[in-house]
Length: 166
Image (cartoon, rainbow, N blue to C red):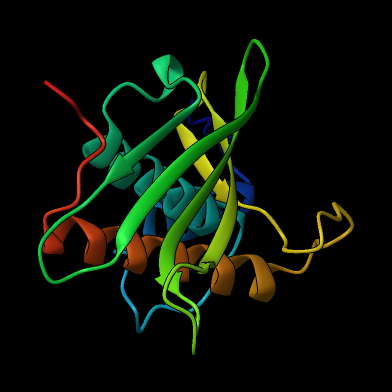
């Protein structure tokens, strides 16, 4: 929901409110690009929304996911999506490629093994820190982590991956 400060006649406060509102509008229209840099909270939430939409394109209804799903396509690694936990409004997921370990035929590595948090009510997907800490509040780190997820999900879709089963 967008709120706009009311204009006061006879003062210059209306000009200041319009300038702030203009900056918010410009930031909310930010196109998610590999060249984009974090500009603020609104841009980060736009990236989370883009992540949600990209994963939903691969997996369908994210609120209905259960246990694990596997996607295999020719000429690419196996992609696995595991549901780690679920609550009323969120789900914790693990998204990984299964790679053969160097020097072993049957041993498999899970790379990059990304922990994702889905906010079902807000339709957002956040890449969580690898160490599980919630103290990470720096915009640059969150932006980098989520931009990587965004591009990887796009890559997986281009390769033909899908968790949607007929």
